[in-house]
Amino acid sequence: MQVTSPLRLARAAAFTAVCLGLGVLAHLFGGGAVAPDALALGLPGVFAAALPLSGRERTLRSILPLLAVLQVALHVLFALSSPLSPAPLSPAPALGVVAGHPHAGPGLGMLIAHGWAVVLTSLWLARGEAALWALLRRLAVRLTRIARDPAPPVRTPPASPHPAEPRVPRSVAPRHCVTRRGPPRLLLPSR
Image: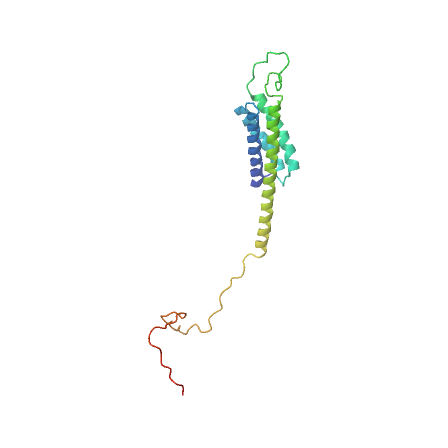
């Protein structure tokens, strides 16, 4: 049994949450209904599709087709699990109605909603992938530098040449003060 790293699991879980969440929102905005059992089936399906691809950095070229396929699969799953609607009165099926399922064949609104979900999600995930891998590369460089030079030398101040001598007491008046109060001093001639 192969052990999967926590990073791969986290990336696959993030992909699943974004893909399933936006797929549900797109399906609802497109006029469809989403049953809870469809979500229960879609969650492990999307996770299973994302986990093998989470081993290395993915670009927009690899994310976009995967999302498109998963959005189609989620749409079909949601459409087939939604309650059946009554058959249309006319003999020809209405736009988006296939074999009694109102949203099995996507209508224009449903196509637009899922298309926007695919494009926006893939752009968002591609940017996230680029940011994550840039951060991991920087972290690897930093850890490599730390491993090469684990601790910088500790600089100690040089020892005083006369540590046993007592310190000269300081004057109470600060050195930078000029005291000019009082009578002028007499200048005595030097001898």
